[in-house]
Each structure stands twice: as structure tokens, then as C-alpha cells.
Image (tube, rainbow, N blue to C red):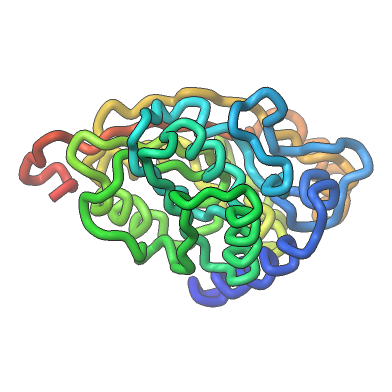
Length: 278
């Protein structure tokens, strides 16, 4: 079994490669990782076409939802994007915060940070900044952020509890997050659970939805709400790389569900001792 650091290195290497690919290659695979499917163009990502503030140059087709759609961002807010990639959701968030707000993107892949900064310069946005760092130890001050967003990233992080604690730390009292992620209902086939490529592709790194929501609750967040839920279907031509015909048939029988969910939760105005938020 791979260590947490080995998994992080795997993800960093894969996303360095993704930063150098075009959107079509990324969107036809699982979060940009793995072989492209011949059956579908877009396995996980939602359509950003009608979203205000969308900048095509920053869209690498890596998300599994539209967290900014549900994030309740207001003018003047400070917004933090975890795993900001080339800046796609940051630029949409900036449209909502306006010139009086601030948007911070954090990513641990240097080539993604470079790409995002170039995009920000091209767009002339001086209140969007990108910081290289690990979201398990955010380079962001305590209680300095109004809204946290993230798009298909926490499933890639071995220590999800650490990330949630960091979100709690950086949010202001009463601040909130809206995060899109991949979760499971039922057990993945062993081959998919163990394969490193599918980990980097957001699937084998996903956890049970009930565990995911309970982890958020135990961290001390309140008002936990599933804002959107959609089924993710892994195409047969990808599954064939991992499963035989019988296993594929069993997998598609509905015993296991892979879902994209967008989850909202709030940091309490006041911390109650024992809640996990202190």
C-alpha cells in the first residue's frame, strides 16, 4: 500500500502532466488522469458555458461540479480556492467578489501555479493571487477567509481530516464553504481501489458519502447541505483496463454508486467546546 507522501507525489506528477495537456484530453478522462475514453467526451465535468466570469483559457476540464454556483459569494468577500489549477474557479469567484474582494488560489503543482499566474496577468486581474502550497497545511492566515471553494480535489488528498481542519482554521466565524467532490455509495472493485492511476483520476481516492459528511460534522461545521448530486458513470472502455467482463457487469449492476456532490457547510459564529471547531 502506498504511503500518503507517495500518493501526493503521484498526484503532483500527474497534474504537472495535465497542466501541459489541452482541455479535450483532460475532460475525456477521469479528472484528467488515465486513458481517454472513446465513449464520452466528458465524464465528470459540468458545463461552464453559461457561468458569468468563466474564462476558457483557465478551464482544463478537471472539475466534477460548479461550486461557485452554490457558494453564495458576495461583493467584497475574500474567497479561497483549494487546488486551484489554472485558475478557472478563481476567476469565476472574482466575478462575484468584484474589484473590492480578493481571491486566493492554492495548488501544490508548480506548473499549475505558473499557468494560473499567466492567466491572471492576461486577464489583468490584480486581486486574484495564486500561492504554491499543500492544502493540508494552508499558506493562509487564520480567520481571514469568507468563503472556501474547491472542485474535485479533496478526493485526491490522503488526509482529508487535515484539510477540513485547515478550512475551519482559515474561515472567519460564520464563514462557509461550497465544495464539489467525488464520493461513493457501496464498495469499489478491488482493482479500482488499489490502482494508482485511478487514485489520480479521483475515483479510488473517494470515500463513502456517509463518511465524508460525518467527517465534516465531526470537524465542527454546521448547516451541512448537499447542494447537488449527480451520478458518475465510468465508461466500459476505461473499466476494461481494470476489470473482466463479469466484474464489469457486476460493477454496473448498481451495487456501487460513484457520485459528484456539492456540499455546503458553515463555521459556527461561536465555537462550542467539544464540537471540533475550536
